[in-house]
Length: 466
Ligand code: DUC
Ligand code: ZN
Ligand code: ZN
Image (tube, rainbow, N blue to C red; front, side, top):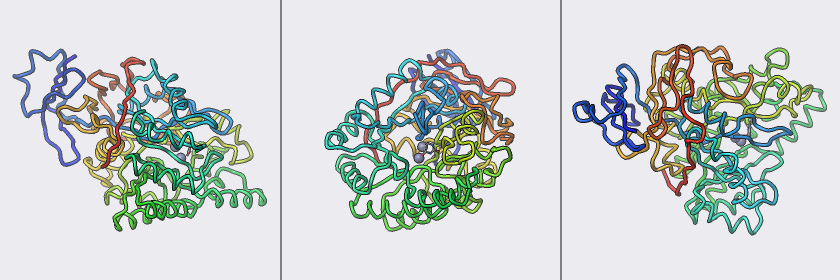
C-alpha cells in the first residue's frame, strides 16, 4: 500500500512545516516540500491535507484492558479498546500484564497476548507488572527487560497487590543493571487506610470522600519516598498518573538535583476537579479513580509541569466501568467499593489539543512531545513517535477546526458514560493511519472505525533512555 499525503502542516517537537509525505510498506519513506511530481503516479491513494495538521499517532503508555479489579473487570477488551483508541488518534498502546499471585512474568504476558492476538486494531506493547516478587520472578526480570520486549515494569505502592519498600529497592537495582525502567503508582497505602477508617467511623461514605481519603499528602509522601530510593540506588524511575502540585514540585526539585525521574500525568488531572464528586444521584461515582481528582491549583501546576519538562508524558489510565449497574451499584453506600477507573483512551488527543493547545497552556509541539515523541523514546518504541522518514507510518491527519461535543454515544469505548460528557472540543482526528493502514476517519459528526481488528501487532521494545 502506498500513500501520498499532500500539503499538510507537519508538526514535530521542534516546529511545524508544510510538506508532503510518501508512505510505502508501512513506513514513512519520504517527506518533502513538493513530492507530488515524483510520487503522484506510484501512489495508490493521494490525500489532500491542506488546512490539516499531520501529527505522529498518539502512544498511550497507560491502559488497563480487560483487567480484573475490585470484584469486576475493566470493560474494554483488546478489540473494543483498540477500536476506540484508533478513533481517538491513538496508534499504539502499552497495556499492563499484571502478575497474578504465583504467576511468572512470562505467564502473565502469555495470558494477555492470548486475549490480544487476532483482536487488536492498532499496535500494542506490554509493561510487566510485578505484585508477587519471589526469587524465581526476580531472576526472570532480566529476561522481561531484555528478551520479552517489555523493558518497563510497574509496581504499586497501594492496593492489595502493592509491594513493600524492599521490593521497590530490589527492583530499582535490578532494572538499573539491565537498562529497564521501573514505573510506580505512588500513593501511601497507610495514609489511605487511616483516612478510610476515620471517614467510615463518621459515616462519610459518599463519592467525595474517595477524594478526601486520598489526600495530596498521600501522593507527596509516596513520591518523595520513591525519590529517596532512586537516590540511594542511583537508579531512575517513572511515576505514573501524577495528580498533585505537591508531587510535581518534589519531582521538579529532584530533577534539578540531576536525578532521572520521569513523570506521566493524565487528561483527568489536567482538566477535571474534585467538585465532580458532588454530582447528584451518586453521579460522583463516575469520577472515582485513583489517585482522585484534585483542585484547579493542581490542574494548573501540572500544565506548567509539562511546559517546564518536569512531566514527559500523558497517558489515559483507561480503565472503564459502566456508571449504571457497576459504579453506582457496586459502590452503593460506600465509595470504597466503587470500582476505580475512568474511560479515556478515545478522548486523550482531542482534550489535550482543545483544552491545552487551543487554550494556550502548552504549544502544539509540546503536545506532540508528551503524546508521542517522548513516550516512544522513554519506552523504547524506536520505530514510532515522530513524523520522520524511516518511522512507522503512524499518522493522524488532524482537523484543528472540527468541533465535537463529547458524548459517550458518539464514542467507541465499551462504557455507558464519559467523564467529559458535554464538553465541546475544537480539533478532531480526520484520518488515522497505523503503519500506513487507514484505521479511522471523520464522518459527518463523529469518527468511524474503518480498520480491521487483528491488523495490529505486538511491538517488542528494547531498553531505552530519553
Ligand atoms: N487507578 C485506577 O483508577 N484504576 C486502575 C488502577 C489505578 O491505579
Ligand atoms: Zn495506578
Ligand atoms: Zn493505571
